[in-house]
Length: 93
Image (cartoon, rainbow, N blue to C red; front, side, top):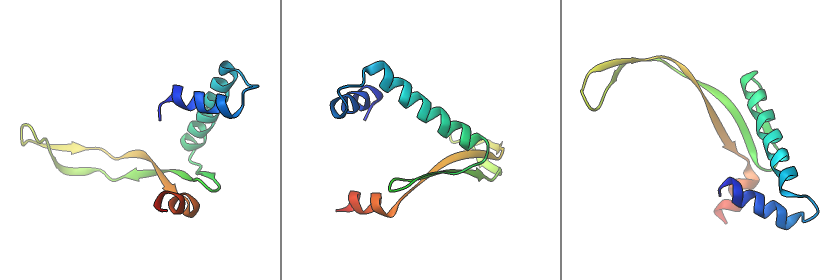
């Protein structure tokens, strides 16, 4: 689902709120998640899932598939999502 589709669905559920207010709400929500993750916190949305940062180890012997050359890949942080039991149940039913 794209951002405009998401805004349209929220507008259908809440017709009293205009589109600009919905966009501000979505932006604020996303920025707060980003700020929490950059500060090292987990973001738990009950009934939906948890966002967390996981450190990926460095690789000394990775290979460039195009040139077959050995390259070094430094360690980095990645955002991960773990779905809640309720979400898994809804998706699998």
